[in-house]
Image 1 (cartoon, rainbow, N blue to C red):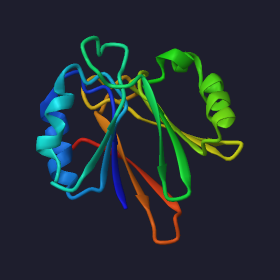
Image 2: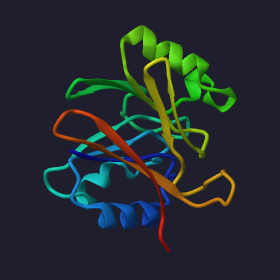
Image 3: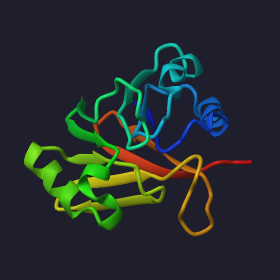
Image 4: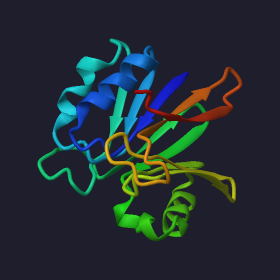
Length: 163
């Protein structure tokens, strides 16, 4: 199973369209917020059988998307959130505790515009970074690919936009 994880596109859709085109086909696209109105268009850009899971970010004012959601993929329970309610700009401790309390083994977030990947106490915490306004050193637009193999094991790849 191939999953594209993106965040913080801020309606700068060209980068998102490019990544979707390059990574097709995929089974699931996860958007971790700050879509700013493009959420209704993403379904037109992915392959026909691609599922969508999207949450609202702090800049998604006029959307009906949920603030966060829990999804199950195989044996994995995953918390999807933009992250601002958990103060992720200051660290992942609060998000880790929330994921642990909910019984999630993976927590995905955005908001910081910086890629992040760490396993803490059996919980994988990840942020794909931003496709539009990257803030990490080098400032390359970024996303993640998550593959789940036949045995249910997750494999993650941090990716950067090719120009």
